[in-house]
Length: 58
Image 1 (cartoon, rainbow, N blue to C red):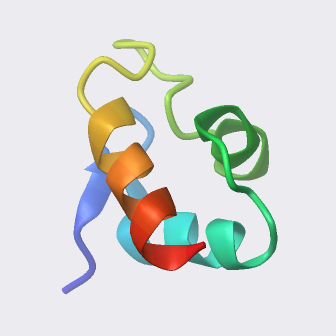
Image 2 (image 1 turned 120 degrees about the horizontal axis):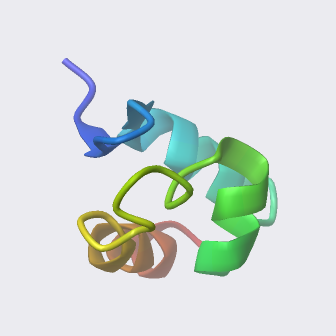
Image 3 (image 1 turned 120 degrees about the vertical axis):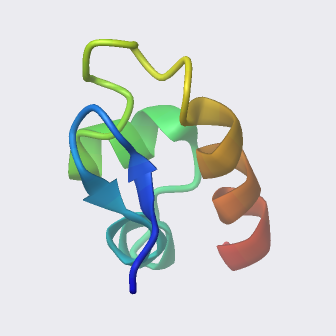
């Protein structure tokens, strides 16, 4: 099962990783590509995990 990273928007880890592999190497770029961090919590719950995924996958 694909882990949901952005709970507010229902964005999965694989969606975020795909955006990173296509060049989204900042949280803002991932937000533009996927919508992650643009939900009700404004990234409070997922920003740190997205930063980890960027470091692991860029």
